[in-house]
Image (cartoon, rainbow, N blue to C red):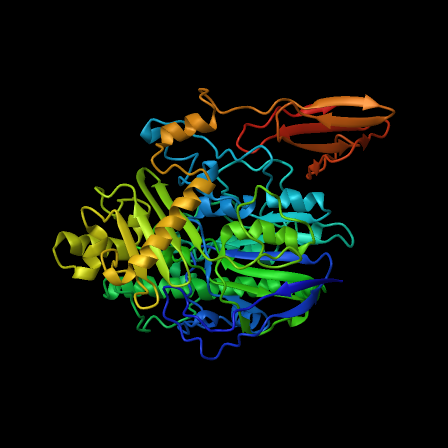
Length: 581
């Protein structure tokens, strides 16, 4: 067993830019506790998730499984994504690097570029950067992803033992520790579209690990993979009166969207419960660290895609083995860039020097961070450039396109009925002053918000003389951060692609792997700096393994066996697959 430190703040602080009652929470002094030396790690990841659940102060809907997880674990109210949308945020999670430092900041790099006269491309991190799952695989972990990727680059074949709708810890080797990610899509923004209904594909969570199971609509898209509303479980009365944020219009249309939002959360809670039941039935609960979190903030208009807290702040619960620290709250600031170094720290490995995050758990836990940082750039076909820095109470926003309004007409978002209502009433001149803020023709160059007293970030304090000291501090932190991560917000996307491709006209390609045989040992190498090398040993052409191995040491190849080998540097096209006998 190894000794790990868990530091928790003594004071109960307000949940950043959210009004929550934390009076019943336990916040403990710093103590030590023991974890397994090589714990299993399970990530339960939902989409577009604000703090809409009871463990974080919102009792609108009952979530028995998440509430139990929180009662047996630690709630973290101050987790922030690096962007108000999924793909850039997921890039940060899997690399430990800020999206705008590796070319992952535009949503998405491989979509909506043709309409803008640009080629599809991928983020290109420094050569030494690996996906966190590959690093855990090298440490002996069985790593699975079920099933969303969306990293702003194609994952190398070395990234996962399995990445599919069937991926599950059940398929690992005997006694092998695992890192498993299970993504839940029910709470996605598209769950607010009409016609309303749960995605049938979510039944995959009940059958994960069974590669022979089949279900209807496998692989269907977000928007099309719906059951009819008449078949949808109703978890909350449609007559419930929901509290509407002031930037939305409180009418029947928005009330219905809020019902969908909470109903989707309740359905997701049932799916989480099914996975937790599998874990317990497999006898793995008390040897597994369980993370629950969202991939960014909420799905509603003026939440998703923006870098107000409603778009960045997402709830996190961590349950440790044997209910260590059960029923407590940790108020420290945590960023998505902290996840990768924390995973390494939890398995006793030193975080990589290139990682820009801080380990908040484990044997390499660092001091608590003072600030979180975020960025907003292109979304689909519309571009903005915004950067933000936030401490425990104040947020500073710098707008690099002040002559452009905040609202971006994104067709996907405009499928939400509440968004359609905002636009209709805007055009009819019927929005109030708060609701009209989002539709201003221009925006301030700088903004400063006191998130304790102004949780919806509506009152800009930039010119208030009482806050000039805080403004100077956060301006300086913004400048420091931009320089530290080599983020140039004024760089156009075309210039960014040229930089990533080193002024070449096309995406770079990973060199083919070099195969050498010496003393019955096969060694593999690649001339592309930083390339990962994956291989399969094939004993029988009729039974080719699904899994690619990560090349670490020379391979003993039995008589008559063959190798399939591929090299891939993140952000480059992979090499051809080499077949070697």
